[in-house]
Image (tube, rainbow, N blue to C red; front, side, top):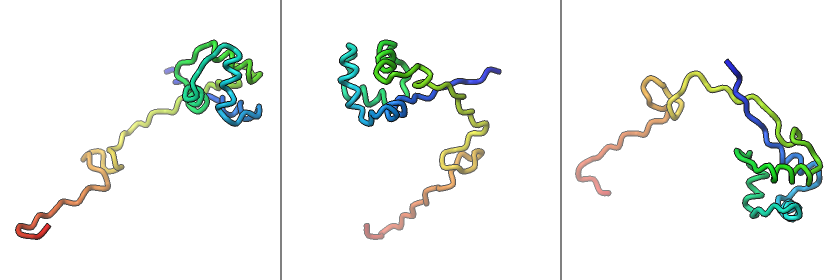
Length: 113
């Protein structure tokens, strides 16, 4: 059985070591290299782990930060899937009921609302 692989995106950490603490500082540096991204795209690039990344953007980031690919992308083992699945609420998986069950409403005829 082969191990599942994942990766850690370390752009934020590399930016911090270079004195870039705001995502807005990347926009003009990317624009100098012909990369036009919106503020929200740059924010997502820095704060989220990208699933797809344009290689021109990657090369521009490497040039801006003066680093190598392995400084930005670190291979890690994917978290192992849990063997037993529990029902929502953490209760008995056999019954399908969670620990916190709602109380049954009691309706009394003729009572004011």
